[in-house]
Length: 492
Ligand code: HEM
Image (cartoon, rainbow, N blue to C red; front, top):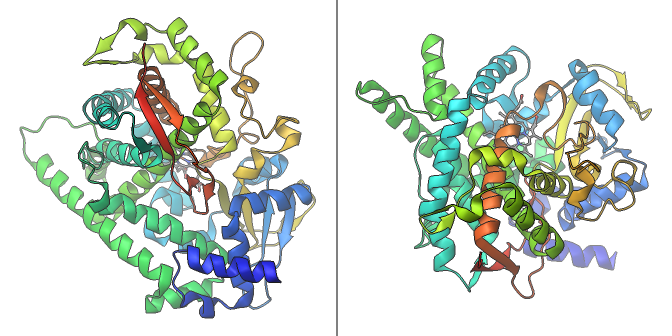
């Protein structure tokens, strides 16, 4: 009890949630909230290990909080692929993520099929992918490298830099313009949009934990975290609707050449059918949310893991030197990798997979059964049961990854012949499995390989003294204390 009390008091002090929420929440959800936020993913991981990979959580009878948590790969295969038709995102998911509107994350059935086909054709369009790599390269040359040069030798929060850099890039890819969040003069303090996304994803975890009636009550009266969600959604809506309005004006000008951003492609596709500003807003909002934190989180964890594993750093630099002509190719003072060379970077691919295994940007998935069923683990599922799948725990299971599952070891992804080992998606579920797997998977590998190889070849990243790196309890796996590093230009 004393431990609980101390830790509740410290949670109240440390969380962003208003004091009003504590009396509203009551003792039990308060304890739960405390346990989850103390080390949300670690706590779930421990319980899943103790219970053999699946456990039933029972809340008070009136609270509608029951769910089944699992990290069992056979259950994953069952829920996401084999018996996919029996599980949906469900009404709870839709309510929790209501700010995504009718975007692809939030819909099932025909609405999902339609968006899936449309986004599949856009995200796999080679011309568009080449355009994205070109804009990324330009952004690195004109902004990222000058920012790092300007702060060389000083402490830099690389998580902040990664967030700002990816936010600018995702806006370039999705909306076709650069908001200039990352800049040498450091505008970050005043830039509201990325912060608005962050606040929503932080606050939304609360909706996963407390009874729906509680947060709906708070929403109705604009209390605590709900106030933040509605304010931040308004800020983002203004930003996105403005981008849609400008894009429409641009498209009306005949002299405007073909633009290769996703919003233009969605509008062209929409001209053939129905496409309201609201549906464009929902799709664009979802795409920005899908891409920005996933990539910046992977980049941050990867930089930390490489900086704390000098043997891995040495091997990746050797691979870049051996497999690419980067050493002899300098553009505007920096060395840039060629797009065609990226497929040869097998070790780098393994580093990215290994980072994602240990630190999945999207650490859990929520599903709801639409009929009675039985999981391969033997758990009975009744219609309406919620299932919380822990991707974070699955990446740390000894049964899948062996005794060294907690070690960062990119070699586990490479065969004796030197090629990549294929791990089935239901075991390495970071991009999900089955019909709803991530549409940005190949794009993500391409962009991350480009960024990481170029960054590591040109710069050295060392940890700042006293920096403690640990996950922050949010819907996205970010670092609680940032990632303070000393950056120096590498002597190539
Ligand atoms: C490291 C990077 C990424 C990871 C780990 C990742 C992970 C995931 C996961 C777990 C899902 C399933 C979500 C759910 O069903 O609730 C998903 C879906 C999706 N992702 Fe990604 N993602 C990444 C990057 C991207 C990028 C860059 C884009 C595009 C801009 C993207 C677009 C999508 C889309 C459109 C879906 C919805 C698919 C559907 O519902 O059919 N992702 N992603």
